Structure formats: C-alpha cells, structure tokens
Amino acid sequence: MINCLEGPGLKRSTVALPALERAPSSPRPHRTMGRLVRRLGAVLIAFSLAAPLAVMPQPADAAAVKGPDTVADTAALIMDAVVNISTSQTVAPSRSVPTPELPPGSPFEEFFEEFFKRRQQQGEDQAPRRVSSLGSGFVIDASGFIVTNNHVIADADEVYANFADGSKLKAEIVGRDTKIDIALLKVTPEPDKPLKAVKFGNSDILRVGDWVMAIGNPFGLGGTLTVGVISARNRDINSGPYDNFLQTDAAINRGNSGGPLFNMDGDVVGINTAIISPSGGSIGIGFAVPSNTAIPIIAQLKEFGETRRGWIGVRIQQVTPEIAESLSLDRARGALIGSVNEDGPAAKGGLKAGDVVTSFDGKEVRDMRALPIIVADTPVDKEVDVVVIRKGQQETLKLVVGRLDEGTPSPSATETPEQKPDAPPPVTTLKLMGVEMAEMTPELRTRFKIKDELKGVVVMAVEAGSVAAERGIAAGNLIVEVNQEATLTPGDVENRLAALKKEGRRSALLMVADPEGQIRFTALPIE
Image (cartoon, rainbow, N blue to C red; front, side, top):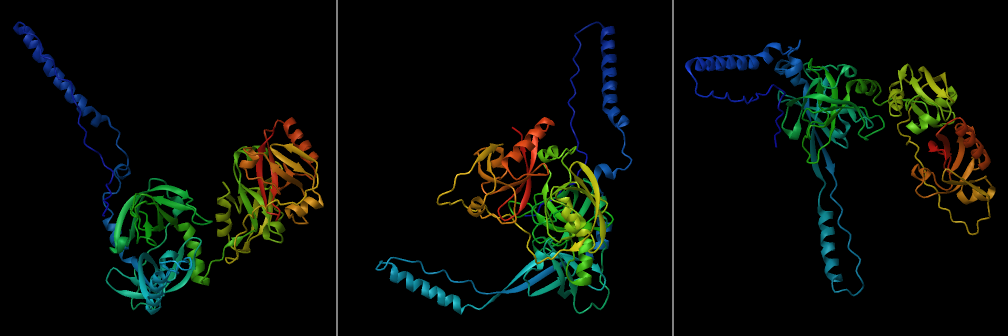
C-alpha cells in the first residue's frame, strides 16, 4: 500500500448567503426604491465577501503557512548520498519438534514415533540456508564511511551498500552501538572516485513544526523521499537507557531504518530508527535518533571502533511531587540519587544517597531521564561541576567522569525473599503509615536474609491497599532513613514523623533498602 502525504494548504469553502426577500406590489416609486435596496444589498454582500481578503493579515513568510512549495532542488543534491543496505546471513535449519510423551501402550504411540522420526531425519538432511534483509544508510565521508542502524546489520555475514547509480560495494562493520542503535560501516576496497556525502546539522535547534525530509528504502522500493514535520522532541519509547528521539510524521516504513532525516537545508538532523504501527506501515508516528546524540557516538566508533561513554556510578530515581514536597523542593525536578557505587566517581566526588542532582557539567538536569544522557555524552576523565540539593541546601561538588563498561549489566532490584520461619520468636512491633516495623535482631536478620552490614528498621508487614504497599514496600525491607535522618528503631521513625508533622509536612521521604542492600527512596503520606 502506498500512502500519499497530503501537504497543508488553503481549502475552498462555500458560504451560504440569505436570499433577498421580494418586496410586495407597490407603486413605481416603491419599486424603484426596492431596486435600489436590492442593488445596495448586492454591493454590501460583494463587499463583505471581499473584505476578509482585504483585511486578512498576510504572513511575512508564505512558506510558514503553506509549507515548502518543493524540495526537489534540495533532494537532488542529497539523494545520491543515501544508500540501500542489503545484508545476508547463514541460518541453520530449524530444530525438529520433539516427540510428545504418550502413555505406554497408547494406540497413537507407534504412529507419533514414526512421524516425528521422519521429521527429525528431514531436518538433519536440510542444509543451512541464506536469508537477506534490506535497510537504509547514508554516506558521511567521501572515502566511504556509511551510517545506518545497528539492527539493520545485526548478525549479518555480509553487508553491501547499493548506490543510486546502480553500483554495489561491499561494506565492513567499523563499530556499533546497541544502546542507541547505530552502526558505522566502511566500503571496501576504497571507491575509485569520491562518494557523494552529506553532513550533519544541529538537531538541538529543531522546533516542533519544522519541516523535515526522510529518504530511505521502504519495502525495498529504493530511494524514496517523504516530507513531514517534527511532531515532538525528547521522546522516550523505552528502547534503551538513552532514549531521546525526535518524532516525525514524515512517512517512515519498514526498510527506512538507518536512513537520514534531513532539514530543509539538506543537513542530517536525525537517523530514522523506529515506528509505531499496528499494521507495519506508516501511521505518521516515526522516531529518529537526533544528530547531536549520534555525532559523538559516530566519532568514537570511527576512532576507536567502540563507544566510550561517561559513567559516575550511581543509581537514580525520579523525583515525584511527593518526594519533592518531602525534600522542600519548589517543584519536582532533577534526579534523586538512590545509591552510590563504592569507589566510583560519584562516591569519590562526595555524592550521597538522597542528593538531588539539578545540574551536571553546566547542563540542567530536568528530570531523572536527562542525567544518564548528559553523563554518557561527557568525555571520560573530564572534571565537572555537579550541583545538588542536599537537605534543602544547594551545594556544588566536583568529580572526574569515569568510563562506562559496556559489558557490565546494570544493577537490578532483587526479589524480596519469602518469609518461611519455623517458629518466629516474638518481636515488639509498631505500625506507622500502614507499615508494621520492628527493631533489627539477629533472628530477623537471619529470617529475612539481610546482609550483615545493613542497618535500619525492619519491615515486618505492610497493610494491604495502603500507599506503602502501592509504593512497593514489602516485608524484609529496611527503613534506613526518614527525611535523611538515620533510623534504627521504630521509635526513631515515630519521633521523626512527629517532627515532620509539627513542621507542617504532608509526606515523609523514606530511604528503603532490600535485604541485598539495593536502596531506593519513596515518599509516604504522614498519618
């Protein structure tokens, strides 16, 4: 199915005019007056139709209303730099279906054994087969460097770049970044003549509503151009830790992956990567990696063959309105430090759990999602200023950015161990905010398998349907702090809540640890 994009324009509208009422029979003077009235009415109606055109304010730039009249001139300059990426790989024959287990003596036992035995023999006789796929890419250097998506060339044995003039060149993978889905290729051998290349533009200056062009290889049709606008910026589509996509309504379909998104000057402002579509075709919701996100990654792939991202060694949380209120912040902003890796750059720089980072290396940290992106783009070994809010006061710290080990998995929350005591000893508990809690004892540490070095008030049970239950607090967790004050007994928690209530606070910020020591913050309403 070919979807045509209809450009915006002025539509013709029909205006219904009230009919002039015929005057009753009358002497000639009255008829004359009637004719004058009718003529005057016709003049007034004509004027009313013309008046809107006369007084309608004209925009300074007609293209701002109608969009670009044509992009043919720009397209002619950049089309040859866009290539079709074809890949092939060897796939082993699929495994045969295992024989189902049947009761001994079943009347179908012999039949199924014979049937699945033949299927297994057929599978063993099959030779490995070759499969191919198509995508898009674009040349960024006349010597033959090409950018595409990593998923276009993932697991490929061979990669070829097909050019608009019909030539086909083999390409080697220089490097790839799975987190942002970018790959850098290099044609080999080096081409006899310089290739047509395009340059990157500044995606940071794009505005919602700016016109863009997408060029690629949808459904294997070859070089295809579509036009649309930037629909949104900074989209998080849950595809990775550094999501910061541009959203466009320019038609992007299967096969467009890896192709460029151009501005009206012919500069690449995005790399088309993903679409939302229930049918597999374009519904006007496409996503592109911003050029300013891709440029440093491509430079690293070109120089090192791998990415070298910044890293500071923290786990972070979103600052919710409840957490912001408990920390006396004017609004929900910044990134809340949940825990700090021992001996990491953040720990060496003085960052602590409970700090709210509002600025990193001079860049505003609007929310939790912004911090990993800013840190990753910061050069390794650079000393930066970090502005944090700690216990209601703003402080500026200095730290040296480390390098992220791409092979190290991100720490994840652990499941709360099941409570299966044979004969639990009696403990004194106190119930606050829907949480039943007790002072730590050796028996409780053993029962919940809490690490020896962890300290805090033990959560014994959580009231079903309470806010604490909704926030994920569970038996075996520890309440380590209340509003950044350490707590070792239920009495400490009670006293801290009473003080907050006296100060007029509506919620309390709890530092909660699981039995393994993974820390997070949550805000609970004060009863």
